[in-house]
Image (cartoon, rainbow, N blue to C red):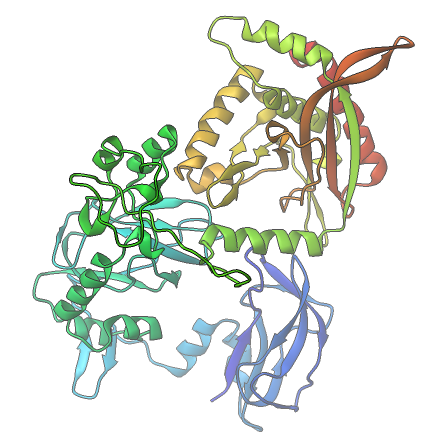
Length: 542
């Protein structure tokens, strides 16, 4: 039977693609794995291979033409096969299915014994897409166990996405019948996460009433639901921090630990399956300075784990592999795409910060007012973007998007990497409003409590490493922005003023630009305007 191949989605932001070159012609024999065409996406030109064998019967998009994702790209089938119906109405997979398979009245899947359907009161919960860029998720913690009663609105699990760890609530009531993804395990979006329904439901029948994924098969391992649940529980109970496993901790306990500077690896959890909860942090006592020998027992009543002393032989190589978090993997992917698709260039200036320092002292002297130098930089960038709209753009291939709004993203370092909360309509905010929003967003970013909406939509980004003593650096552009500003530390050094050498405060900033949208002269003019605002802060108050 002929296979319809649609325009694939080859990147997370791809909405349409252009066929740069066909490597096969109508009538050619196709083997699985053959490269059919080169397709230009919004980020790169990529080879597109066939997952089917047969003869190339039809090409739906000529070379040089573009089309939306899921548009009919090609048809592969047996030589001489009639594909008229597919061409006329088969621009999507759905059309092909409608042309070849009668629509059933209900979801019914044939098994070796009988026709099995999913009962109406049973719900299959899939791994949700909790952010716009999420492709897979990791179950950090299950808050319900197999057999537990679940009410609508109950929190089922904490799921780690590429941007944050978020609570996932149930939209259904019933009993938790099945867990498809164990704590600490990852799975793609739409993988079976759990099943909720009436107590006593035959879970195997429900799983057999749908295409069963390899991961779900492995998780169940052909065991009845009760045996699977017991196996999961026993596995979790043996996990400890000393074994190098994931640390299971409630969001509140994590927040309190960060505020107190407590290393969670040194805390023994007393919650379900060793989960660290609030009382564990409140009752925590630091490990004694002396290091016990391996195997020595803790003193009576002590809640901290034994610190083991490892001794390596001289000259012995040693390493440890740590599983990359979803956030770290997505950061790597996004930055690689940006660096290798956008032609970066860098401009750097040095700013006189004497007036900025004096102005900040005066502003912070007002009641209930506190701003940082970073707040002043963010405000100056927003005002400079208004005067240089070319910098506030996005490259879209055939077009350049000029953003009429100004949303400045502020890079924040977190435990697993980097997130960029966004200040919406930054140019309309005062310095004190910027300071308050940055403090709130950065604080919630560090405890993974930002919502996806708070990390989307930036038109420009600021990255500041000055607080770490970094004098100057360059950054990779945060796509789809056209530029990112890197801010260094403010230092005192000899400068020339009015023909005399005096001590002055300076700060270096560098601007990384996408040369497709921002030319060198445009970037330089933007930095001149930025310098003018920072060296004369009173102009930002007008």
